[in-house]
Image (tube, rainbow, N blue to C red; front, side, top):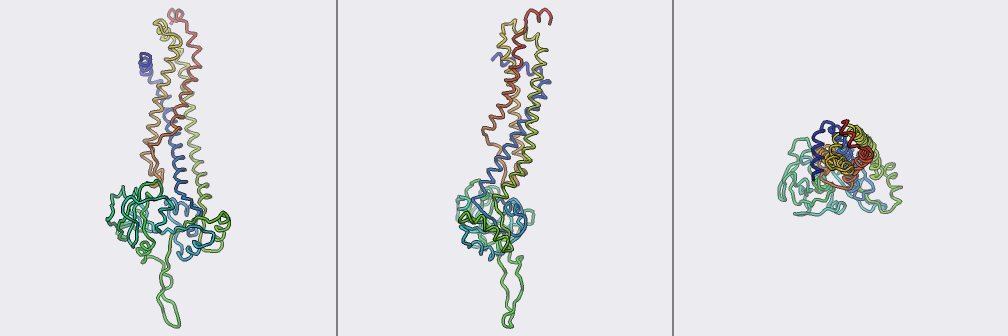
Length: 404
């Protein structure tokens, strides 16, 4: 305990020479932790929300945009597609399962998605209370949506048409169920039947020709039903080779493979994170170099102090423990500050980094990486102590006291 108190006093006495090393260690630990957690958590969310979806069919446009909007719900869709044409591919012999999605309205920042009740089985969703929708205008809320909005079973609300910034008052929805939280996109969605979305948007849908001739008589044309995307699971491996090509070449639709697009997205994300990781490692190395230089030069300035301690009964081994303890306190303080700064940053900017609440990062997670971040500075401390051990053991008490 006396040695620990002495180490603290030495650190306080020399705090100005410690600030740079402390700051460099803190920033490097903080940056490395943020980059690691952002990468790990985003990759886990990407994989978890894939839900074994093999193919997404949408309107012509960017395949990546189709995947992001239809699976991850973090981008605008490329447009609508004919429900009749989508059903033709849903019934293809190579398709095992299909799930239609129709977008349009928002409630606050949450998408109102028209689909069928099988979506719960795709994402392992379960009801927390209430029931699934059976009629038009009935909706089921994801757990995060319910918690954020405060809506309960039996409540009604109006949506915003087009995007989350539009004025409310579009459609009249009634909550009939709330889902349990399960960490997938279901938490962030308002689910209803396709008929609900079609009914709300009947006035804005493309009706095609107003009239058509039949034996000289004019008949009213029915509006064509549209959806935003169709999610597909293959029946056999051959479908992965043939079905996307057949859809892209023989229809007006666009087929996008999640595995291909997510690999491309991961590559782009890794490029940026690797660059920032390199900056973090450079800061860590600079902090280590600063510590080594500081200890090496500090020993020359502290020879008289060490000689006095030796005369008071401190052995060379105890002096080495004192130096090591001082450095250990410094790097542990930097580790605590670095982790605190990183977690605060992730908590404050989680929505911006994670494309809104749907992919917000968890700043409370702990993993083996935290121990690794603590272990790296500890190795530097050990190396610094060992490099200066010889100088400590060579201290001559008599010479230093006579010629300080």
